[in-house]
Length: 238
Image 1: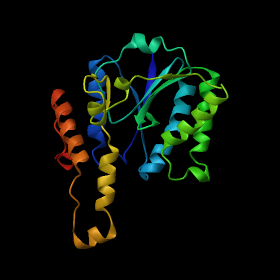
Image 2 (image 1 turned 30 degrees about the vertical axis):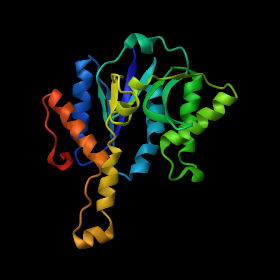
Image 3 (image 1 turned 60 degrees about the vertical axis):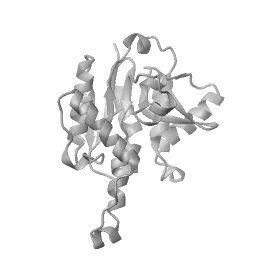
Image 4 (image 1 turned 180 degrees about the vertical axis):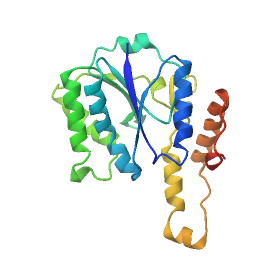
């Protein structure tokens, strides 16, 4: 049986409780529950840097494999047979951008072995290196994995796109694919709040208009909320 955790922070939005409830309701529909931790309010990059620390703690606390999910995920289905038959140390999705592949850290499978313990410790240390200031956690993890794969220090499975499905980007990339774990990009709300919180905008009482990508997120949130009998909070409605 897979044990797993989820990291969350009240920096996600003033409506974090909504995201947590939506996450938990979707998870309950597939018969699972999660270890969820709220952290103190900090700047967004600082919050993302906490992810490897949380996973270090969870790896020490739980035996067996761990499935990590960001709190802005909606779970449609989980194939336990698939996860129970992963044989490598870590399974993670890489999204193709042109000729490059970008690691996505919203869904991560972690085995219970020394290699994974060492990886998480290395990740936790490196996110705080001076040269990594301003980098998202997933970029640091990708650099480590690239190095460890080259020196055959770790075995990596590629997680299928349906388990790390970005609700709008993947819909256009994979039009026939049915998501199993759908990520709803709460970071777009953060960027919108930051854009509206500049000194000049506050001084003049001006507000930016939501971008098309933010409006898509809010529409999708509304659809998923309605599916489980919830309503969008006013502050994140379109």
